[in-house]
Length: 187
Image 1 (tube, rainbow, N blue to C red):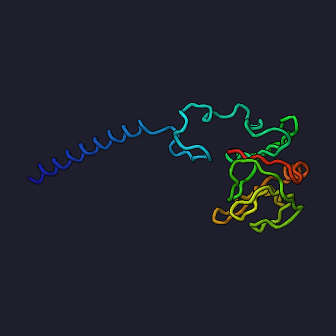
Image 2: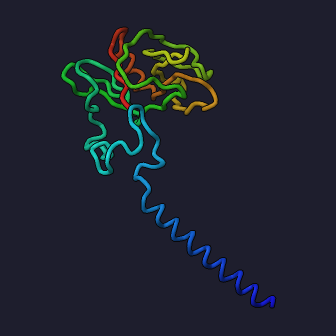
């Protein structure tokens, strides 16, 4: 009798695995393409059909993002972790990658409100060419360069507002972004 009951258990187990496998296949066939991708501000997963313009990479990733305003401005793309310094003609005079802070501003238009030549960052690192443009939950948000040239990614458990760049890029930002310069943050 032990043989027939173990054969029965093996048969039921095989049948159960087949059903689970079939259900998993059906579920995977109906998963939205953007499942697991983080939602960006103003965008919810599944809001646009797969293959839409929002899903396509920009033709020239170094080109100034569309819908980032007009005129002289700093453009900060949160998702691309990149900054563009844009002249009056709408063309970038300089673009560079940045290391984002743990606290980010919402997409929108801001302006440079203060600058500091050299200070100690909220993470304790000596920084230079600080260009501040927003405050979020009491945290000042600004661009800066570490004096030692590093671009450390901040400790995610701390609230920091420093968007770090290389020193040469910090020099360019310092020369470009004077008080009241427009800063456009895009997703």
